[in-house]
Structure formats: C-alpha cells, structure tokens
Amino acid sequence: MAVRHFLISTLVLLSLSRVDRRRAKMLMRNAAIRFCHRLLSSLCPQYRIRTGPCIVFAPHQDDETLGCGGLIARKRHEGLPVHVIFITDGAASHPGHPRLSSAAIRALRHREALAALAILGVESGAIHFLDEADGMLDSLDPTRGAMLVERITTLLRDIGPEEVFLPCSPDGSTEHDAAFRFVSAALQQTTLRPDVWQYPVWSWWNPLLLIERMIFTTGRCALPTEDYQPVKALALHTYRSQVEATPPWLQPTLPPELVSIFGADREFFFRYRPPAPGQAEIKVI
Image 1 (cartoon, rainbow, N blue to C red):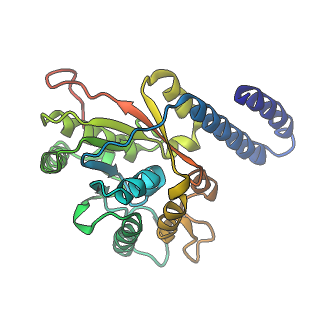
Image 2: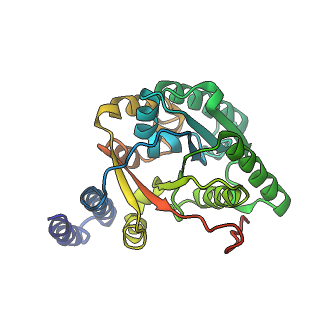
C-alpha cells in the first residue's frame, strides 16, 4: 500500500513540476518522507527498552531531542540512567547574523540544551559539553582529533553504557558523519560492547539515505512515542534559536518542514556493529 501511494504521488508531482519546479520538489520530498515513514513503520519491530546506562551523542544542541527525544523522555520516566554528550558548541548555526555573535549563539544554545533536557528529565550531572568548534568537526587536525577521541573514550569508560545512540552515517551532514567517526573510534579504544544505534536527523531531508539504510542495515527498530510526544515537542520548542526566526532574519535555521517530521508518533533506530579491536581501523580525520 505504501509503495502504491508513493508511485501515485510521484506521477502527480511529476506533472506539477512543469508548473512550479520548486513547489514540486518540496511536494516530492514530502511524499518520499511519508513513504519512508510508512515503510519503516511496517518493517521495524518495536524497540525493547534496556535498563542499563544509555548515552545519546549529539553533534549539536537539538539533535538529541530531534532524533531521540521520545526515547530519552521514556527512559527517564522509568527512572533509567541517560547521559547526553554534546560534541560541538553549536556556535556556527547563524553565520553572518547581524545581531548574534558566535559567542552569543554558543551561550544561548548551551542554555537551551540544559532547559530542553530538564524537560526530558535528564539530570544536570548527566549532561556533558565537549565544546568542539561547530563547523570544524570534519576537518580537525590529527592531534585535536586524537584528543577528542580520548575525551569520548574516558566518558565511555566512566559511564559504562549498555546502549549508545549516535547520528546516522551518512546523515546528510558532514558534522554528523564526523561525530559518528569519532564516537566509533572511541568505542574501539574500550572493552565495552554496548548496543549501538544510529538515529536519523538530516537523513529525513534526503530520503534516499533512509532508503539506502533500509536496504543495507539488517537491524532496525521503532519506538512508539505517543505518550511522550507532548514532552518532546515542549523540549524541542525550547530550542528557539533553531526553530524560530531570529530577527532580522525571517526564517528559522531549521526548516519547519524538517522539524515537523519529528512530531511523528515513532522514532526509528538502525543498529551499528562496531568492528572488534584489531579489525578495520576507523579513520577519524
């Protein structure tokens, strides 16, 4: 049924593209997103809650709420330990803004993250800011990259997670892909063997990435989030610098169409199996 609906929508949109290519492109993307959501909903078994410590890695302040807000809220509601680790300082979200400097954005996003995670129920002592320069994560020099891996490795050892959640790779963002590489490299430095799950963020904006992941990833699951969606929505709204326009700019930095995707009734996760120590080395730069 999902395939039939997608094919019909595609034919309609192709006819519209002759009239308004930009509008047709957006409608085509929305149809592809709906198709992916329906297909994943039918293919994915339900995520089974683990009771041990969990770490959610977020390249930027908001990724954790977008991709895992329902998961975090449910785990915390059940009294389960959740740590959130922010890798960059988020300061590059408003390049060239006439009123907001990088320092101001950095401080603002830090406050927004604390407020959002308080709503989701994460204790302040379980929130970690690594404060790498936003926008530079995929071009760190070898020394800086090794230092970041060591910092992540130390946190992994201290927390001893049973589960790790990190952005998909590829996810349509060089920062997200770089974060994946650094976390993966850090996992190889430990004897820990947590369940590792990838969560999509910008992949939704490029549904071909999701389709590729559905084809080539054997492990996937879905978490129904109906009971926790209002809490997630409230936490996401706390990131006002991202979801609302910052005058004099008239548009928010996150497209509203992208944000609306995360108001759905499920969150999806894809299993990642890190290579064992001594196997294929993961490049971090």
